[in-house]
Image (cartoon, rainbow, N blue to C red; front, side, top):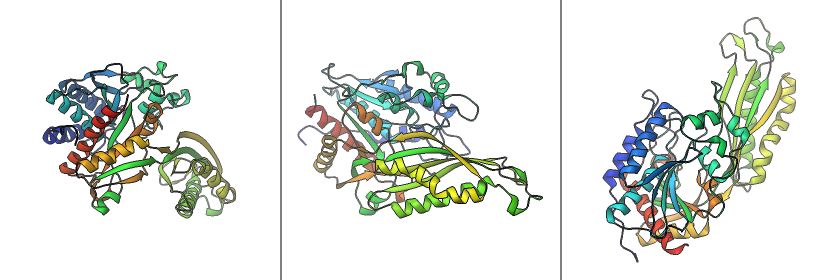
Length: 419
């Protein structure tokens, strides 16, 4: 390479990954929900690690934890790297975490080596990338881009606490989120390291992927209304069973997505959350609240799918004497990564002697929203059997080191190329 290799400390990085992942519900590994006690404990530890690496640390109004390593030209826009440290319930040890801690290792290694980038380098743990208990995902990165709406901030969890109240509780300032925290064009570049969360890299024996685009995601809340009745005394033909209606919607969503995918767009649909009322074994379900999630590389598919689903199921739901209502929850448009970052990642991987490929991401990421502030891209590394969002999620230390090397030298390369 045209500049000296940055010496990374894989033992330090791996130890940090294991420590951060240990902040979990002990009976449901690896669970660290945003805003939970485990999350707040992890944030305190992470702040101390940022400080020990020589970063100046702040928490912005959106609840994003930011560590900055100053550059030699302080008026330049910052280079940003990071991800998130929250998890889904029963998630894995590496999703999100490695993006934060690899960025931290880059900053720490630069400090150790006495090397100074031209641009300021910001390491960011974005708040609540995973769908939160308030129904909103990518909370911190939406705030970055000014896309955290008043309706989202008012969204409650099951105890009635609003998202705005939760952001205040962890130190944010939701009253300042009426506009973008970072303006368009305010970021020199954003580069995020992440496990692929799929099997492509592993199946091809490749250590590095450069992401070309990130799918869009639309989530819609659907409520099926029936009538709660006694399960023993209500004949089958007189029942208004809301759960039966929900099952019809789920079956049709699966059929529609399977029929549409690959013709020509990528399409997947999931109902991963159901709340059944009264939810007892001896009562006919009277109401079901569910969340439909649709992912696609087509904006039009995202806009049309939920409405077409309800239209397709209208007759069968009417026959079951059920009614349905829906409410929009969140929407993220399909997003292309920036060519300058895609090419930088590929160039650096080539120079490091690491075989690589370009590929799309079927998962959502904070990069979608950070991309509103400047060029962005993502480095993917393989994970075992493509598994993610589960306790079996795994990658080897060498795979993490490979990805962190590419991340580090992509940031160094961009530092020399960008104003």
